Amino acid sequence: MRRLALLALVFAIACTDDAVAPSLTTHVARVAAQPDVGPPPPREFGPDSYQTGLFTGTGTALPGLHCDDGSSAVRNCSGYLASSVDGTLLDATLQIPTSATPPVPLVVMIHGYAGSKTSSGNLVQPLIDDGYAVLRYSTRGFGNSWGQVNLVDVHAEVADLRSMIAQVVDVDDYGLNPDAVAVTGASYGGGHSWLAALEPTFATPANKAVRIRTVVPIAAWSDLLQALLPNGREDLSVDHPGGAKLSYINGLYASGLDPLHNGAYPNYPPYFIAWHGWIDAQEPNESDPLFRQIEDGLAGYRSIWWQRRFWSDAATPARVPVFMVQGFTDDLFPLPEAKRMLLALQTIDPAYPVTAYFGDIGHPRASNKPGEIDYVLGLIERWLGYYLKGVGAPPAGVYAALTRPRSEPFDAANVISVPTLGALSTSTVTKRFPGAATLVNPLTDPVSGFFWDPLVMEGAEQLEPLPAPPESPTVPGSLATYIVPVADLSGGGALTIAGQPLVSLHVATAAYRVQLDARLFDVDAGGTKQLVTRGTYTIDSGSPTTPIDVTTITIPLYGNYWRAETGHTLRLELTNVDSPYIAPSRVPSVTTVNQVQLSIPVR
Image (tube, rainbow, N blue to C red; front, side, top):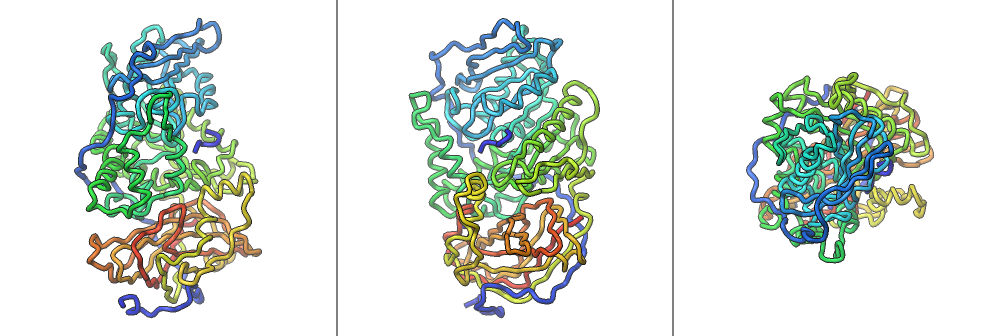
């Protein structure tokens, strides 16, 4: 985990041939924060897409774990367990501290995408030292486990998880406590963790009552459709999904692909391969049956956000306490993936047992500094101590770590704790920009988006193979820029951004679908740009024969906790293309934007 592995109407508005909108006299105002939001509206989804029952590994090994003699500080038990879903053999390891007095609380740790049970091993020892038994296994289609990858489907991997827990707690010799179970993991494992809360109590084959007392999702998704095809409407991914995060999707797909898994078969099922091919080649289109299958599959059966049963239980004593860890600088699963859950749970009950940590952690472009990882692990240990052992007090509220340069070591003094996410900011400053700009798609700057792709940024940070990003735009009509001195917003000093900036604008276009991408930079006196945050928004009329016409939208940026120093400027960029990070729309468009306003939460 220390390196969490891992697209004639326009002239009705006054416009300009200059792609750079002027930013002269502006208005700065302080406005109230946005209200909290609740759970999503009920939605009926089509049938699930998943594949089980093939390539189960039956006959290749005898199910069961084989333990060492327990003479050391840890009793190690390894082997294959047959999932109750379809008999698929999953490679598992259970480690039990020999000094612990039975019944021993159990922590289940799930690996990241394309990983295995040996991934994130450095997390295990602190848990064992704290007296927890730790169960790890390779999820179906990865590592040495059999079966095929179903992307954390509720009928496959999530059911596997319950089966693995049930089988180990049923072995009396292990001395595990079925009433004290926690599930955690990062990224892919975080998706498992969230969905484990869907059925936190269940009976084992031996009729023992298992209770998952808490889940700890780390750098996870809560709505996989929104995370992979963001449309800018954070809580309504199913309302015309946006462009796909292609660099991530293709990178992850390639990293997990094994055409001859276990020397015998492809680990990706046919529907999964078809999904990937469609996303790579097509514009999201809800009239297409295959895309509707993708939409239903990602949202309806792989995302905790859309699970009505979870929200019903959240208002009862069966609710599951949650400690969530999310990255300000994670462009795959950004802050909104935790925010929607945090706010909805607290809407159900302001006293809901949920705590969040936000920092420079997660997928690229996050730094994942060792000191910050250790700090977060300390909070998680306190959380588990309270909910599995009844010891001490759990961390409460919202923790936020100020994002600092990667070269600067993590300092716990830069972490603040506030009671709610809304309390992270104390006010909002607003900048209004005059003028208008015209954006033309597919006209694009060929390099500016490339240099700000998170995977490219990570490669440049680690290997330094790339020159400094060029000043954009190099192609007029591809980018609109808006600049404001930090001092104009702060009143003279530094400005601490605390949360999600909002970009509001007036849009006119004859196209039926337009994707608008935004990037916010902190630019120092020497002209060096640092990406603070970004966002995207897709406008879709719903029909190729119906133009968007004129509308006003607000693009929520992902957010950060960031200090912009005196003497710096903030630079907002608007474009149709932030590729390869997000696939540009394949629908040609000419779009006029004006009345651009940047609202920044500050403290």
